[in-house]
Image (cartoon, rainbow, N blue to C red; front, side):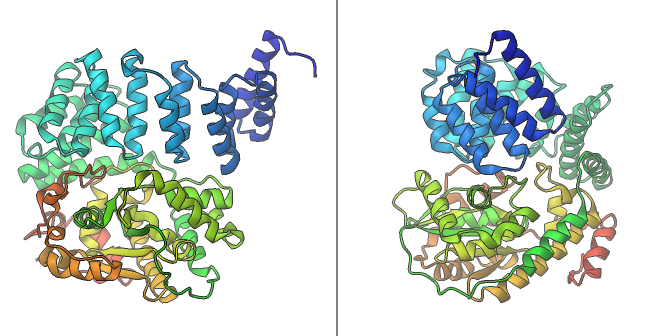
Length: 529
């Protein structure tokens, strides 16, 4: 093959990008591969090959190209930012950490690169590493709004609320137009009842030519602030506007969700495996609908000296993606289900445990608290016979309303329309009933209301099911100082509390479509009184 000139390489790269823009994945891969063959020490084509293979749905080569690119140790900031995002996408945390360590002292890294890498550490739930980078970025420029916002977010996860407030206030003083700042401020304790914040956020909504996502952030912030002031009508108007705008931006098809649930329930099941004697560390999966109390349960379990709490992770999803060689969005999709029949489940379990090992200490148990792993229960039971599965069960209206008023990533697109949310909840309940029939004794339902009323009794049951010793500290979340990177980061640090009046009750009139849809699906709904 003749050597390519610089002009040839530029044309080849342009053709590759044009093919990728046209979603002609195989042609794009061919061009980037030729470029990589001509320039084997250049990491850029390997990063792009990783992207394109992912877009083509092929997980293994996408992951391999990202790891290969990291071994070439790119140094230019743009390639570094792309590469660290790629490595985190595949949960290649150790490769990411090794590569990042090779970039040199933090003081020599530009602030945008510090921010990009801090974000990836935070996504990996390594909040201590993230704040170390953000502290360095703040030393470099104490007034840079992007640093203050990112640092405020991570400080919130770490429970350092006053420091978070100081950074967010400082950011908004410099750049009041940043919608994310108002949204973050509304998450902090004590921010939901400040009239001046409401006035300021409303003023920001009046700015012309606001992108829709910024308007969503501001409306969600207003909802929380107005709710704290007891102005429920105005709070509902803000929430309704935010949900409608967010739903317009998402390509969600309820029929695809129904088909996914139906596919999971139609899967042929292997003969039930006996509960395995624990070999090495035993995972405790905490599953359920988002906002059902999974963070609370994990925080209580974290008080046990036998348990390492590691948070909300996609490691099992990564193992299934690798096992099926398919890169899906979210925890699972129809292709994963269709290919599951050919999966080597013991290998999936081994890969999962090996991928988790770097996070663990000497504790014999660890938690994996990704709520949407309820979709993966059939795979978990086959891949990890020793795993314990705790299913959080919460009042349907409380659960659904809590989802409706939360701004999620694209992973939960069903949560912005009352009827779509109800439909998803109904399918979830049916699937959980199916898993209980299919895997008797493998799943313990943990009732949120009982847990908040009598944490000692419920945690004794949880401990017995998991095979750990109950201790009194497991009844109070305040005994834990671990970082919490979920929507419950603030509430969970306030101890175990039962609300006298559920949050949805003041909005009962507006939530009739949700109530009616749940009831039509056979879900029992309690009184709002």
